Length: 135
Image (cartoon, rainbow, N blue to C red; front, side):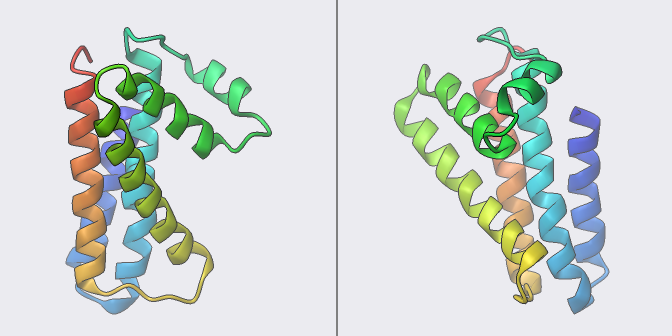
């Protein structure tokens, strides 16, 4: 899953680097899924109440897998720093909303917006590495 996350970040960068308007919006999907997949990886490999990939699938079934995983990450970060947990979740939700806009709405993202989303994804992954440094 970590490899998939890194691949999605690279895909976002590749699309942005094409410097064509039609690719900026497509890059948002990859930026968000890089974070989502890295969260799955963290939950499966952390020492703080690990959840195997199978458990993640079973426990999120019918509840919205994204919301479930975000809440699981929040609970674990909350044990370390409540304010950091709130900030992390807010940033993930903002990126998720951008992904929903990119995938399902007519909105077109600019180069600046796509770069900002990619940076946000990179920052969120860096925070995951910091909070779950045992990985």
